Each structure stands twice: as C-alpha cells, then as structure tokens.
Image 1 (cartoon, rainbow, N blue to C red):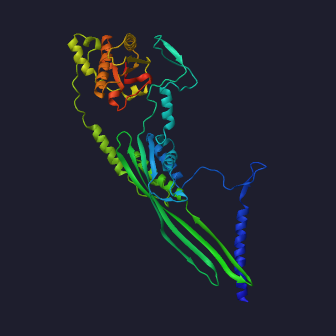
Image 2: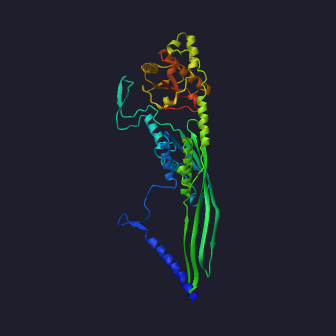
Length: 469
C-alpha cells in the first residue's frame, strides 16, 4: 500500500510543480502593435540600469559636495577587454563597452564631477574642420573683417577663435584583465527508485584594473584592482520510471546565475569610485554597503603624488633670461646688400606657427604667389600680391600666403631644393622691402619638412604656407 502511494505521489508532486510553471508562463504578457501583426512577448518594463553601487556613487557625490570640493574634470580613456576570451559562436565573453560603463559611473556622482568627452570626439573634430573651411553655420549672420573693403562684412559661416574646449584634470584608463571560469563547483544528486532531487553550484570570477592619470602631467595618481565573484546554481527533481506499460520521464527544476556583464559593470563602478575618492581626498567607505565592500581605502598614493607636485611648484624658478635687443624690421634689414644677404639666410628658418595659428582662420584672407617654370623671381602679378599682403598685415590683419611654383622637369632633387630655397628668399626679400616685421611671419607648412610635395593642377607644386600678421 505504501509503495503504491509513493508510486503515485511522486508524479503528483511533479505535476503540481509543473502546474506552478504553467501559471508562471501564463503571467507573461504580450503586446500586439497592429491587428495584422503577431503578438510580441513583453515582460518587464524599461527602466534605468541600477546596480548595487548606484546609491554608493550618488552618496559619494553628495559627500564631495558637502566637503566643499570643487568639481573635478575627469575624462575616460579606453577601458578594454584584455582577457582574450572569445567563443566560436557567441563572440567575446566580456563586454567591449567598459569605457561606456565608466562614463556612466561618473555621471551617477552628479555635479561633483564634471565629465569630459575624450573617448569619441569624431563629431566635434569634424565640425571644427567644417568651421575652419568656413562651411559651418548656426543660422545667423556674423560680422568679420573684409580684406577687400577694409571694413566689416556679414557672413553666414561661423568664425572660430579657439579656446572653446575645456581642459580636464584627470582621466581614467584600464581594462578587464581576468575571467576565470568555474573556480569552484559542487553538487549532489540522490535518487531512490529513479526518483530524487539534485543540486549543483558553481563560481567564476572577473577582475578589473584601472588607474587615474593627471591630464597635464601624465602622472599616475592612483591604481586599483577590483575582483568580483559570480555564482550560479541549479536545483531540480526528476522522475524516471514505468507506470504500467508507460514510461514517465519528468524533470522539474530551476537554474540561475549572476549576470556576467553586470558583474563587470559593478567592478568598474567600484574602481572608479575609489580612484575619484583618491584624487578628491574624500573617504568613500561610509558610502559602501557592508556586504559589498571594499572596506579598505586610504588614498595615500594620490596624496603623495599631490604633495610631490606641490613641492615642485614651490621650488624657486630659474633666473629670467637676459633681455635681448629687439629684432629689426624687414625694411631696416634691407640697408646694404651685405646686411640683407646675411639676414635672409637667418630668415629662412622662420619659426613654426602655433596651434592657435593653425586652428584660427586669417582675418585678412588667403593669398598666393606662383613662380614661373624654373624661375626664382616674382613676376608683376606676384609682386602686386606681396604689396597687398604687406598692406593688410601693417593694418593689423593676418594673412595666409601660399608660395608655389612650376618646376622644370629636367631638375634633379638637389636642383629642385635649391630652386625652392631661392624662391623663399625672393618672398622674404619682398616682405622686407614692404616693411613687414620679421616676427610676423610663421611657417604653417613647408615642403622641405615633408617627404612628399603637395601638388596642384597644371604642374604647380606648393613650396610653403606662411601665416603673416
């Protein structure tokens, strides 16, 4: 009698468990977006991605603000997957978006951190190129200097004067460096008469290594290595036996595992929190939940780097250089053929244009002089251009001057170089004759500094581009 009860009780228990599963499936909702479309399964709603450390990051941002710390300007570099783990069918085992997770962690700290974009600047760089080419507008007219009239003109393109990109104080880089599968596992299965329960458990871990670097000095202020274990389990019960002439094989169970990528995100957030705390000098441990940790933090390394930097700044500066005699203008240098020849040799080494010169558009416009084939003398048209350029520079405007020429095909490489030097001397002498100061000329680009000459239509080759004024 007892054996019969056992025979019937096991499938009964299994059927009750299955009925619970059916009820759970019945609770899953569906959405039909159009009467002619099939229903789409819809379960949980969309929400903000919350992690075990979301509240800790917000808490630390509040502590920084309460401590009176000024907002830190922090950017994120590349936070890559260095594990090298990749499946044949499923691709990379670790997310490739570590930098995006780090950016989100900074954003959760609120106004205590000023986040700077340095990870993907392609759109901003493209718009700067458009602006430099006078192709970018904002729907409004802008007033700029007109070199033709000497007054102001209204233009649809937006002028750029530089200095709009804010510098950052620090940046964070690093990566996911460990992914260890099944560092521990175990389980048990008991069956009596092919009926019984089973349970399994397994553990894996990941590790993240990050560092925070001073943007201006490239000194590493602090490093951190964070490890997170991930656990999964499986439990179930099975029935495998004959009832009469029928074979019943019934298995009921459940399986669950911590999300791997959520573990990566949590580890990155913990590392970012510790690094920001180090450079801010604010203790983050009160914001960590006791069950999560890490409970150990001192920020000693970042404090030492800050102290060393302050000590360097406190050291006395070397004595200033002795003042030198002011440089002569080109017109003064022309006195005497010997003086002119000597100074021209020096002027060939014009100083290189600064970054601001390269990024800013010239207020006086673009001009060009072209030498005839094999010639190193300016023709009448080019001479008139030089006179106009000098007039604009002396009136306070800046000009870009492109020096080009047609080379004789029979010239050797050395002969071509000598011809380019002679043409540059002719341009310099023309500037001298029109009274332009030597310090007003800076080299934007020169063919002798580049392995390949820039070629234009009709066999014309650019020799140099100079910013004057």
